[in-house]
Length: 156
Image 1 (spheres, rainbow, N blue to C red):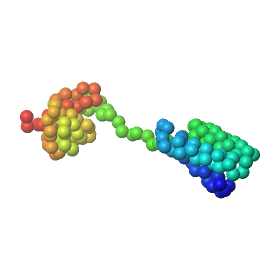
Image 2: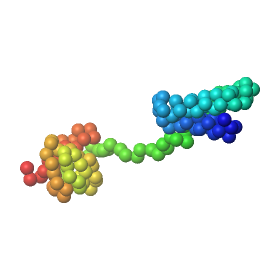
Image 3: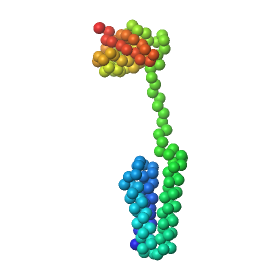
């Protein structure tokens, strides 16, 4: 076995172990193949070049694996993969005087059984009692409970 093949086996083993630690969760084929690749490199160095080269390769394999483990467990490594966007959605914020029972409005989307409606010039997420209401239909607020608005069609 040539030194080129031994180095390639070590590098392939390190890459597979890095993939296992950073990308693929659990013990999978990548980890097993990574360890097998490193073991083949060590075996090849012992068989082809003797004990000195074998122990150098073994030490390189162990140190490389430890360094990869340390790099994988550092917090800054995970920050590169972390999602940094924030959620800007919000629940209906309904003031006491903004929407009251008996107010009328118009559906913006289909209520099946929930959707968007325009009530008193503001858009709200509204719910029905199980019925479907088409977009553009006139609605009446039947109940306002904290942040949930219940509506029904105006003609019923």
